[in-house]
Length: 455
Length: 55
Image (cartoon, rainbow over all chains, first blue to last red; front, side, top):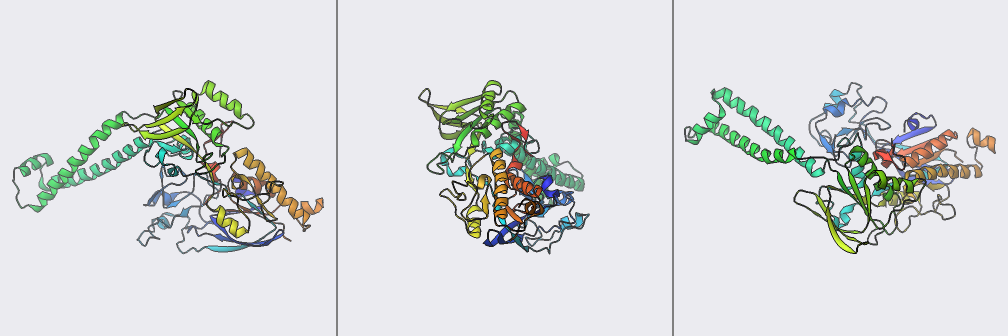
């Protein structure tokens, strides 16, 4: 990523979208909208002072909403470019409120609320489309209750949890436990505030709250509005303590999840959604199970699936290693339903096809190996480019030249083409580069120095 | 006839294409809709089958 930012032959247009394409191979004219970040790219040093001071918190999409970021943000810590961006949907300034705290805190004077989108016209000879994929939304499978049971996650959410820089710093805290911890934090903040206001009353009346309250209850201060406020505040304080106590007792028993279940083919190989195999999910689940075991050797993982597709260099060996040394078990089963036990653990009901019995088992976390769905930008981009998409919504390519779109000079690589893993995406990307150069060379243009030498 | 190349999408595939072409001395425009490049791969912790870091 760093190399992309530094390479003199690459002009990086981040936070930008292609609006229009005209022309043909060798002579395309592209209109690109460079969206306003409201932060000057040349001035911003990426120090993060603005985000530290910003008063507005927003769910962090990079962490799949498992943590919060600010309304002025960098997409992720090591992001290239490191320029911060203002999220106008949440920013107080753009919502018509008084703020401008980021502007005051920026030492580089980079915040510019007046910045506007810029339209760039680019003349290019070839186009490579590498727009990737979208994670399948498992709420479309109601029997898995993804939205209702907090301890049922997508594989991408679990991936973020495994990351040391992720929302749980690599600890497998059950999301239901995290919710209670957040509630505790909120209540503690409210308690502190209440204590502060009680303190003010105590100072004013030179009396401690408990003694005052017992006197108040004996009708000692009828019609005294100020003392009524004091008593109300104390009652609120007692109420908060009462709500907090059982939560604190619960939190004492919290521990990281160590019994995991992975459900394969969530949305793929399923005629209701996508009939195709998403390819990488078997290996992805095995990897997550191995990494979870590395974090805590007590961890056991059960992978529920029709079969495991470990097709690739070193993949089968990786699977065998997971069984031998990472406590990973494989069950040939399709999970029928996920329910929730009283202690918030998900319970899987499935048919064990080896024993031909319907069973149910409780796990601490369930991870759904979600399908690789065409990115939502695929269809509009296909219209802009004037190329076709296939029956599933991926870009249509030619069987004989698997990276060629339906229009000469436009090539498709990676998951925009079809579901695939990283090594395959990289191979396709290099291949698409070659195809682009081939086409430019065959068109006999002046080409780069090297191309003209070759011809 | 223009020799420059436009790449749409700054995930692992777009990054790889951009670097390959730039190394071959072609001028590349890399367009990414999000504030930073990296795509889905940047969200991954480790990669299979070597458990190497994704970033």
